[in-house]
Length: 281
Image 1: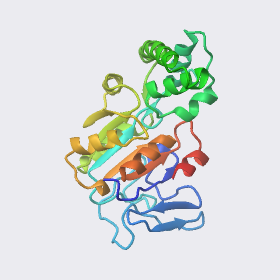
Image 2: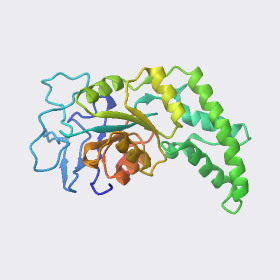
Image 3: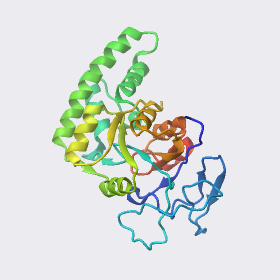
């Protein structure tokens, strides 16, 4: 584990993330560490397989593409597991113009009389929520007052759980367009689909049930640590990280995938921009 280099692909839109018409000047890092690049004028499809190998015969198509569409992009022929992030990647978590997790953290801090800006929270997207809350408490109180930080973080975390539950119950949940079809296509070709998130497992399962998704498991993540991916690999009974793909929309998603040594794809459906995602890869 952690030996193979990951793949970073930035794509837009999400529901066609394996198309070949990617961002201009894209770079793809192959598992052997060899790099290929393509410019906007280059019509060559950059396949998700090792340099020097013949392209795999099987490929997963975006739901809105036809079998003969030349823009489709092959996935690794032996792909066995895809670990998807939740909010911002597969779940459209924007409620009243704001990501539901950010709004819940802001409401939690407001209940103890502290204002937290969206700008402060955006870089923390994808981070396990209690860790994000503790980091914000630490910034406000200081590392020399650990007991006070612990007390405030515990209070805010409890308020966050309540605020998140309220938001999920009151809000109309929707998937990012094409997500269910992607899950079905991957599972049809024999790949496992596991949802991983900085939310607690109970929250993840609630979202999956409400969206009526068919997946193979859920894992709570503490990104950028790779533990959740390793747990997913164990759940899928896989011993080769080259058969695993991680998909997410944040910097810590990319770092998590890199730390696990798996193929990693970043999508532009979240709140963190292209520059930040490219910088992480």
